[in-house]
Length: 234
Ligand code: SAM
Image 1: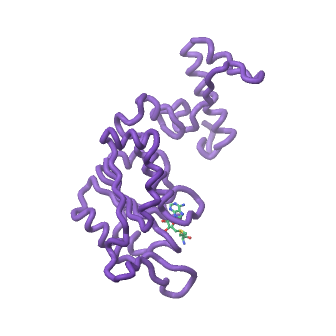
Image 2: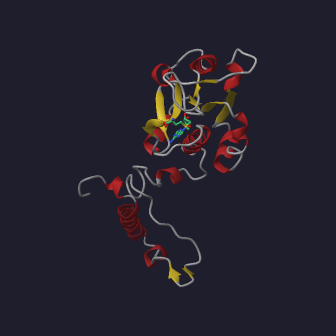
Image 3: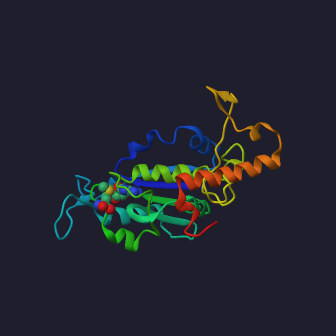
């Protein structure tokens, strides 16, 4: 899978993809990340990417022309496997289900906004999706793009050492909690400062362990994320 990132800060991405799973995914060829500098698609000598908002107001907006030109250069044809995604605080909330869906794209182009945001015509006429990584405002889309790439990369076939890792995780319908939080996990020592690992996990009884994990996942979800349980009794 290829990720394209359109940004005015290409140097931002020198660190985030150099570690762990994402690095391994790149080295194995399962994942390619191409960073594009938005200023390469400007026509003036100052490489201007922003302008004042019509109607007045604070700050500057990213102009539409360089963004449209960049996307049209990277994707000369809008094939079904190519998706254009605008990172925006106003977008649909990014979640595990969306990450699972993105995995089937061949190429995903992420547009990073800056300043007060991006001319709305990008959302209206260029992007396939406008997405937010949470109900808060970042100063730019670069961190959000890194979050999306990391989340999708670990779902790509062959990227995780153990294929079941991504299946038994929080928010995955296939997980211990069936779309809820993952269950609590423990490692050695079995007794740490008097805090003991639940006995059942040491029992070797796999059926019992599975039942405990399901119920512990439910209990933790009810305590920390009751919204995931939905409105009615489950
Ligand atoms: N004026 C905008 C608003 O109130 O919705 C906020 C603009 S923000 C300062 C600048 C850029 O950061 C946005 O264009 C977007 O690309 C990115 N950004 C900010 N918050 C984000 C979020 N929660 N998810 C994804 N991108 C975000």
